[in-house]
Image 1 (cartoon, helix red, strand yellow):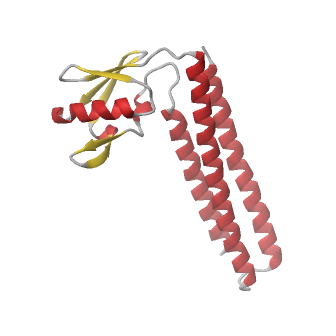
Image 2 (cartoon, rainbow, N blue to C red):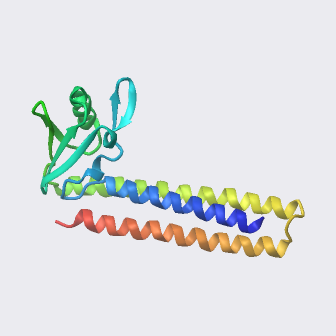
Length: 185
């Protein structure tokens, strides 16, 4: 029972780490990348739909991204969603494709992105700590109900703490790499 609780906590923490990686990838550096638009939702026939499901992407130049909608009627909806996104891009539409030219990153904008990344990193760590708290509550309940001994509960709690520390350290490492990438000119 204790092993199941620890295994479940580890799986959830791994998922939180993956979400953090995706969030960090969505914050742009100096290059255009389809990953920047992974979280952009487009109002498509009344339903919020991920942009990735509505269009294909091409990167002809370092700071230019071409977005070709599968359905041409969604062109204006996609353009509107891109303009409203936190990516900071100015989309232009020629009737067939949307061309997004990413502006040169100023030092001020880079620092703003670092703040965004730190916030996302903190969200990931909070999520990991919440998973730890729930798992600890489950372990305490197992000990209280007599399904596990106190020694086993203490050992499992130490294991849970070391797992939590390793996952938060991984988030910190990802955060540090992304900050260096963002501040690099």
